[in-house]
Image (tube, rainbow over all chains, first blue to last red; front, side, top):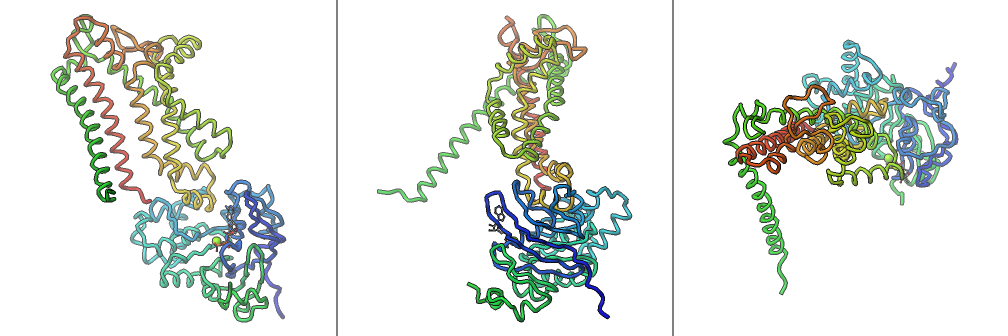
Length: 257
Length: 283
Ligand SMILES: Nc1ncnc2c1ncn2[C@@H]1O[C@H](COP(=O)(O)OP(=O)(O)OP(=O)(O)O)[C@@H](O)[C@H]1O
Ligand SMILES: [Mg+2]
């Protein structure tokens, strides 16, 4: 007997996103993000991958006048509805950016920032989630003696893992990553990729990779985006081994032009 | 014949250095002159005692106390209002014709001559609100004069905090106010303090705004409440330099020196704060 597939974490229905200057950066996109898996969104520049990620935590709203059409359901609840509590949403859906941006404070303060914003003040709880977050991001051993140093003193690779760790410490449900390894050396990149394998057991991960190779390595599910459209959507490595659409094939084989 | 670029650059550089040296020399000369002429007058007695014999003898204590009161009073009024306005403009207000009009107004207000503020204060605070010529009216007038400086420097300091910090904080579930309070304000603090001190420095040194609103020619005792008038260093200096016949030159320069030290000390504090924070800044 096969058990029913788990309910999707996000259901995207006919989503279009328009920036105030009229750019339609996503057109009529529909897809489902499964829980406890790594979903990869890839494609050439300007395809709308970042826009989709920033729809999941409504960070696009910081650009005043951005318009959404369609629906995005998180556990069945439409997060595009005007009634949604954005602060609560962003606590559930954490994000790691392309450039590591440690907040201008110590490593420890970076790690407790998210929970403190949420009103957590119990020291034991803060310390525990700090350590858990740092361990899950494979950073604990490197920084356990440097917790009270300014976070800016860490190396670039460590800073980026700190950015992942501080999101993990908030214990969100979803982790969005927008080209998180684009500025990192291969070893740091491998560390981040490795930690994703454990992280995805507890979290839903949506990632925009910085290369097709990385997309192929990480994908449990993958979507190929081209100029605001979802061209192809598929499970596992299929999209990379046997793409069904010609444009996907051209892109993954590097014949794109 | 064309002059080579290197020569042009050298000429420009030399000219700029000369101009700067001339400016610096002028300022240094003024400071040195006042120090030389004023230093002999300085003594604990000069600083801490009341003026006597029609101000031709004794000290300048009430003027010093008055200037301290006026500066502190102005700080108490202008700093919170200025900060809130700057935070509003930089963090909350969207770019609209309305906010643009406010910004232009602020820039223009900063350029209005101080005597106009004095007349405004006389009309609004002294007469209309009935505060009379008092510390309260003078502080309010000085605050109005200082606010544009505080608002525009503070706004600039807030804006110079990298946008990425705000983005990260908001993406971690921070409200706008949490982000401002925990990230933006601390990062902007050195720039804000510099603006605050520059503004207060101007308030401490100006005569015209307090002339009709609170400064007294001579008072036999220190002010007892904010509704009393007060003596103040800049006005006192004006009085003893132009209004009192037979005034010893020593006292004039001594008073000028005390005012100069007061203002320079504020400047020094601003510089120290700025360099302390700059050395700790991580971006
Ligand atoms: N703030 C904005 N205002 C206007 N247009 C925008 C804005 N941000 C993105 N766009 C446009 O939306 C489209 C999609 O951008 P998006 O950043 O989502 O693409 P992407 O797939 O992430 O590209 P990249 O691989 O370069 O990161 C592009 O045409 C881009 O120019
Ligand atoms: Mg992008």
